[in-house]
Length: 280
Ligand SMILES: [Zn+2]
Ligand SMILES: [Zn+2]
Image 1 (cartoon, rainbow, N blue to C red):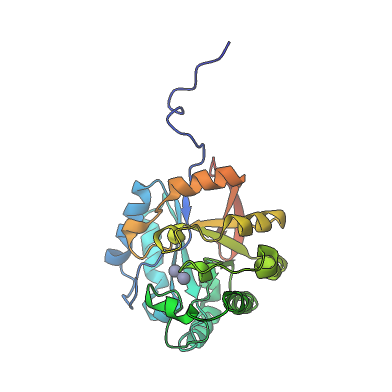
Image 2 (cartoon, rainbow, N blue to C red; image 1 turned 90 degrees about the horizontal axis):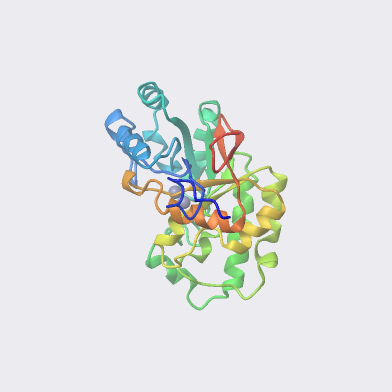
């Protein structure tokens, strides 16, 4: 005899319910000093989407806008959410030296630092700008560009200033694919991530870019899973409307890959949570 499905659960094909977004940009693409009027809409949006743990991770070039007192005030007003102070450290040849100094100075106030590579050989243009950045790939060996990209990822990881790597295979953004196998392309970097005890984010941002694929790829995720690397969940939202974007789809993907845990951070200390129950 077959028992009836539990009422209330039958509508959901996947039991996962994601609760954390660890890649967000309250300032967007310019300095907008942190204030309650800027930040509160992000918390309201998080609450509406069922998120209970979010990290602000503005680009390091806009560090002047980050205000820890404003984050504390926000926390006092919204005690039902975990609000993490974070930043995204770039390999920007112009600005990131100052960004690193700022992170070192404020390390103890930060919960979480993302490491990112947005620059290849050109110092004046992010390779991930759409569509112009695709020009940096034209007529060149894609395998060589991938090797150069992942070398730069290892450089960011080696700074000792990051907790987690953002959009690990961003180099695929315009749809360029290498000929070499995934072990050749990313194996050394995955080992490096493991040996430096860093996490990797699962970023839905890739689904709104030309490549239309999660960052990182399933193959890279499987390699990382074999090594026991922890994952965060992330949207890379540049507007509070994008917070938790495509998280239902991400939950299905994680379910199909067998990822049962996500990690969250408090003062750079990693805590593992069960995806389904938001508990340790
Ligand atoms: Zn980024
Ligand atoms: Zn970002």
